[in-house]
Image (cartoon, rainbow over all chains, first blue to last red):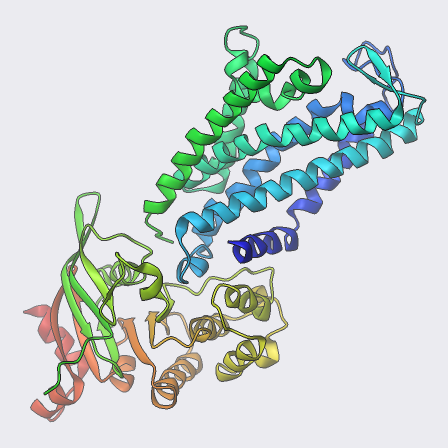
Length: 257
Length: 242
C-alpha cells in the first residue's frame, strides 16, 4: 500500500495540476484582499488584519476544494482508465481495492498540503495588504496571535475531514462514469445543488457541503459537543456510503480501455 | 508420456456485452516454450479474451489458469507469472521511459534499478530512457511496453497486436525481439494478431478465433507437414470460411 501511495503522489506532483491550483489560489486571494477594506458592504468579511485572514476566509478554501478534488480524482481514476494507464498497476499483483485506497490516500495528502498552502498564502497576502495586526479576530472575539494561529490550523485541519468525504463522493462518481469532464461536472453540480439546499433549515444539518463550510465552527468557534458529534457522524455516513460505492464498483469494473 | 500443465489455459471462457456474446466457450492451452499466435479478424473477441486472461475484464463464465493457478481464485499469484501489453502500450506521457518503468518496478519485489537498465537495453531503448514518453514513436512505445512486461522476469508474455500501426522496420524489430526473447530467455509468448504473414514467421502454435469461438488450434510444423505449400493465410481463410 505504501509504495502505491508513493506512486500516486509521485504522479500527482510530477503533473502540473497542484502548481496550477496553488497559482489559482494565490491569484484569487490577491484579487480578494487587494480590494478589501473592513466594513466594505461588498464583502461579508469583517476582519481588520492579516493574521485574521485565513481563519475568516476558510469558505474560500472550501470553494477551491469543491473544484480541485473532482479534478484530481477524475484524472487519477476516469482519465487514467480512458488513457489506458490504469492497466499498468492492474497487470501487476495488486488488489484493486488497494489501488483505489492508494488513490484516496494520495488525495488526502493533496488536501492537507493544499489546505496548508492556503493558510500560508492567506497569512502572507492578508498581512501584505492589511498588516499583521495585534490579535486574531474570530467569532466576535479577539485572541492573541499564537492562539489565533493554533485556531487557524485546527480549523483548517478539521475541514480536511469533510473534504475527504467529498473526495470519496467524487471518487464514486469518477469510478461510475466514463469521462473525466463528466465526472468533474457531476461532482460540481451535486455540490452546487447541495449548497443551494443548505438554505433549507431542515436539510442543512445533513448536507455534506454544510459540513465543508462550517464543520469546524461547532468545535472551535462555539464548542458544542453534541453538535460536533452529530456533524462528525454525518461526515462519517457520507464517507461510508460513497466509499462503499466506489470500492464496490471498482472491484468489479471491467477495464475496457 | 508425462502430463504437462499448460502455462496458460482458458476453460469455457465466456463474456457478453449488452447481450452480445463476444467470447463464447473459449478453451485455449498454451504450453511452456510456445510462441502462440492467437489469430482472428478485428472484432472477433481477441482483445476481450486477452483482457480476461489478464484480469482486466471479469468473465461471465469459465476461468483462466496460469500454471494451474486460477486467476479468479488467486489473482496475485497467477498474474505475477505474466507480463502483458493489452491493446496500445499506454504510459504516463509527462514522465520519462525510465521513470515509468521505475514506478512499475516498485510494485514488484526484487526489481532493481539495474534490472530496469537491463530491460531497456534488451529492447534497445537505453539511449532514449531519459526522454519523456510523449516524444516516443509508436514503435518505441511498443518496445517500452515489452520492457515493462519483462521487468519482473515473467514466464509468459501476452501481447495484443504488437505490430499494429508499425512501419515495416518497426514490425521487423518487434518480430526479432520476440524471437530473441523466446530463444534466449525461454519466455513463452501469447500473441494476438490479424497479420497472418507476421505470425507465420514467429509462431510454433496457432489458434483461430471467429465470432468469439475458437475454430481450430494446432502446431504450425504439423500443419505445414500436412501441406507442402503451407500458408497460414490459406489455413485461416479455409477455416473461417467453413
